[in-house]
Image 1: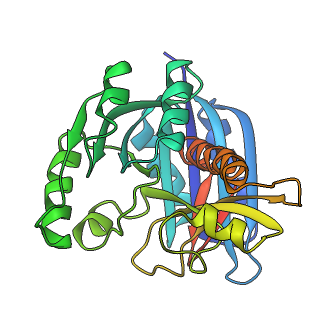
Image 2: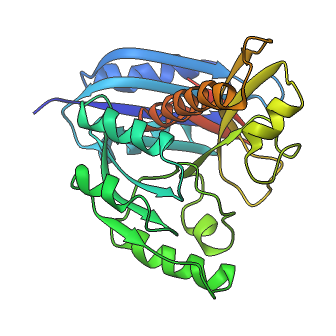
Length: 279
């Protein structure tokens, strides 16, 4: 039975790469639906993402590609089926709600396996969509111990991606190690300028002129996140209350997180040092 798969390749650039890769696919009668290629001038790394109609053994194709590309090559063949995701949240609802609604409407190519939170506030929302909810309190626990309890819940589902939907705790340690490059986060535009309670009100009081949000891969280096997607909007005097500014800002956060997650679900995000290539 033929199914769509995504072929991902990263290798040092050299002559005839596309010819060699497509030659293997042609020899095995595989049809390319779309193909994106990029060469980074700084590192001379070659990146390829191709969507292919697939009916053969993936291991056979990987073996043939490895033989012809030879060494220092990363090859992945992923299905276009839905990926399993876990959502971590705290109290804010807007990003979580947006993902749940998109998933309910079949607009998100994912299976939301569970929601995990350090507060119980969002359990009713989770129940509305029949999604398992795990409340893991951080009270009287060290950060390390709390993360261990969070990780126990995550392991129940073996997710492909972990989404931090306004999860207001910094992750570190074993979670980052065990789910390297699988965790995405969203934050407002003015870290570290407005880091305390209600950054929207702080920004309004300063009469900011632009607002934006950033979605990124979570890493242990807090200021060196590989950025997946950003969105910017100009602000003027018509935003005459912090609540109005907050509403607009939350819309941007929802959009940016949803866009970044979809790029991850479609295997379009390549990590190059502390930056990303989107194909």
